[in-house]
Image 1 (cartoon, helix red, strand yellow):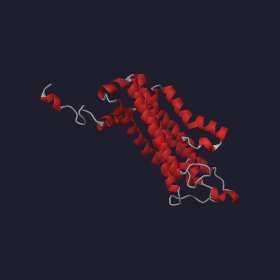
Image 2: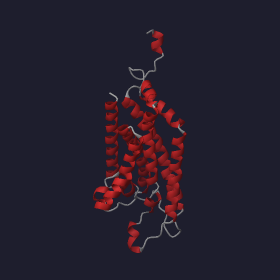
Image 3: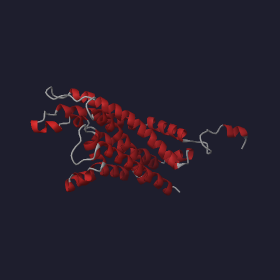
Image 4: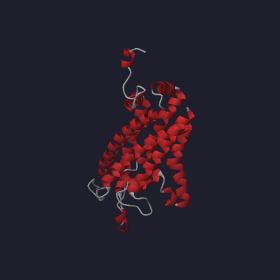
Amino acid sequence: MTSSALSVRPRGTAHGYGFTHAARMEWIKLRSLRSTWWALCAVVAGMIAIGVVTMANTKAPSADKAAGFDPTNNVLAGVALGQLVVGVIGVLLVTGEYSSGAMRSTLAAVPRRPLVLGAKAAVFGTVTLVLSEVVAFVTFLVGRAALAPEIPQPSLTDGGVLRAVWMSGAYLALIAVLAVGIGALTRHTASGIGAVVGLLFVVPAVLAGATGTAVAKFFPTMIAGNSLAVSRPMPEMLTPWAGFGLLVLYTLLVYGAGVRMLVKRDA
C-alpha cells in the first residue's frame, strides 16, 4: 500500500474509523428516514393533545383531596403515548437494518459492532432527549392554560414542577436507548416490539392488578407516571430520584446485554 493510499484513510482510530464517524453515519441514516420523522411528529402532536385534553377535563378537587392534588401529573399524561412510539422506533433502528440487509453495508463501513450500536443509541437518544424536553415544556405551558379558571395553574417555580417536567423528557430518552438495546437483543422486529410493549404496558398492568403497587412500581411506566411526572411524592411509590436511578440502571443493563448478544451472534 502506498503512502498516498494511507493518507486518505479517515483518522479516528488505528482501524481508520471512530465514534464520530459512526455517529455521523447513523445521523445521516436517521434523518433520511421519513417514517421516523413522521413518527416523532406523532409523538409531538399526541403528547400536546393528550396534555391539553386531560387538563381541560381536570376538575377542582374536593376539600379532603386538595392537599394531594397535582395537575402537573395530568398535563404530562401524554408520556404514555410517547414512550410507545419512541420504543418502536428504537427497535426498528436495529431490526430494520437486519431485515433489509442494510446491516451488512453498515458493518462493512464500521466492523466494530459495539461502536455501531453505541452510535445508534447516542444519536437516537440525543434526538429524543432534545425533542422530548421541548415537547414536555411546551405541553406543560399549553396544557396549564386549558385548566378551568377555578383551578390554580401550576408554575415551573413551584416545588417539584420543574423537576417533573424535565424528568419526563429525560425518561423518553432513556426509553429510546433501552429500545435500541432490545432491538439488538432480538434482531427481530415483531419480537422486539412485543418485548417493548410487554415491558412498558402488559407486565406492569398485570402486576398492578395482582399485587397492587408492591412490584409494579419498579417498572418503567409506573415510575414515569407515579414517580417522575409528579410534583408531590405519592405514597408507596418510589421517590423521583430513586425511580430515575433505577431507570438508568435498567437502560444500562438492557443496552449492555444487547451489545454482548450482537457480538456473540456475529462472532
